[in-house]
Length: 188
Length: 187
Image (cartoon, rainbow over the protein chains, first blue to last red):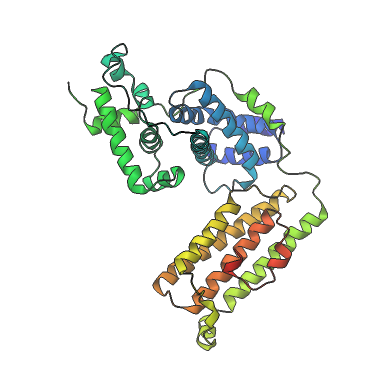
């Protein structure tokens, strides 16, 4: 079994095919195969998690771990229609957004979305804002940030985002417009 | 203060790294949690489970084929209009929504762990074929919403879809429901 995994690791010619083989091995309980899948995909999963978690590293790590545990549980349902990385990515989005919804439900009183503090925080300064697009994104209101990250960074379509977040397509478009406007103001 | 154009912003966003490595290796935490979960596929699945999977798949395949065969062009012309195919008080859109809810509920669950991987893959493939049939029928019904034949075919295929879902998830009610007349109300 180990030999198979090592062969797969050396076969960089067709990552999708080797992912499919690793998935089959992992489905049979081969953790080394699953670890290889983890190593190949953790970067993209973590990038998504940290952007959707407002730059919170601890929460992003937790969500990334949850995503890989959930994916392990659901591996038998992976049919190979899409690439494993695409499937995992979608699973991660659903997990993070689902957890955010659950967190919101647990709150007794919904707190209003906070607009980014574009005027009062002089310590951070406009220079840093220009240089740090990631920081500017993390300062966006959470809905606007989710839509912007999923659309402009991750490449999802509005109808997919609307489906994942549970909003109308028009709302997704409006949130994207708002997010871009706020970013441009923030980075000006 | 000069505000960047939207295109400039999109260019900047496009340059963001798609991959960011976490500061620490998360694998150990993941690996330890995998031990808390049962193996994905039980190596010693029972003959009964295999028998169920094979029999159910055959049954669904035969029933599905039968349903489609019954509604060839000639049959439709000869078959008298069945009055009960229109569901009183429930529009086609309502029926679609009702079924979609049931399908989504099942889709969100994990397959029966007693099923062998091959059976799971086969059932999933069956579901995809059935979904394609449902989509095609739904498109036809939009063009001809009053056709009782289309409505009946649509309901039959949807019922088979539900039945396959039940097998896939080890639902105990499969044996009873698969032999009954399809009913949107039962959903």
